Length: 271
Image (cartoon, rainbow, N blue to C red; front, side, top):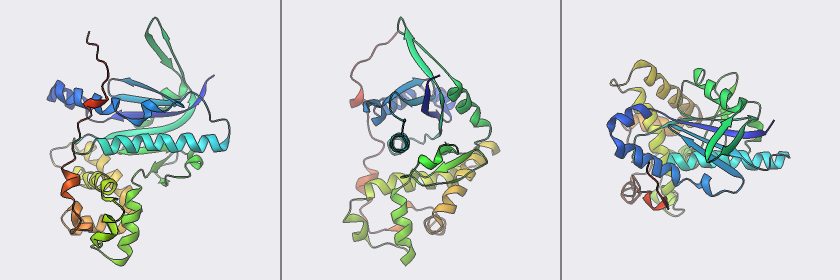
């Protein structure tokens, strides 16, 4: 068997995007094509329909290797979260470990394995949005923090920039602008705080079905547990993402999104 670390990412609401027109889907695939995961030699990426699979092609034989691979898998999901800002597209992702085989026969991709089946079936017990990691391997996540979600999975906080905001929030909000401007962290903070805020807004959106609102609410609850000061500030400000530091020049960050990732496309074949 080919035992690997395995990231399975599902784009949520894909069928709705399809109904909105091909431009939405083409744009999404450009985002996926631009991801850093494609340029890392230790990993292979497989994309099919609304699913992205990333697995390691080498390494993982030592605890240090395992930590390295898990760290980068989390980074890949964080990268996607940032690039999706302004598109109102979200995902559920699972990092697990198990056998997975991938090869090609006359350019026909063939892939299968228990890791794929287990990750696919995890949707039944992960009624939320975000990144989750199998508890069997969560101890390898030494960089990204996590919190228990259920008996099999932990919720991973890929919103690392918000740890800084939560820390500064101990002294009360708003945070002085120079604290954020001097480190240029606003470019990381805004996409992440926008993502967290979107979880609350989605949980309250009456146009969504109850089951969809529950997924947003479950993610919002995980963020409230980890960022109590930040989430309280969002609520008290009427969900104003700039309220944490109103004097920061957030406009130039907003103006950047949604970014055009067509530059990542080197060749195109249409059948």
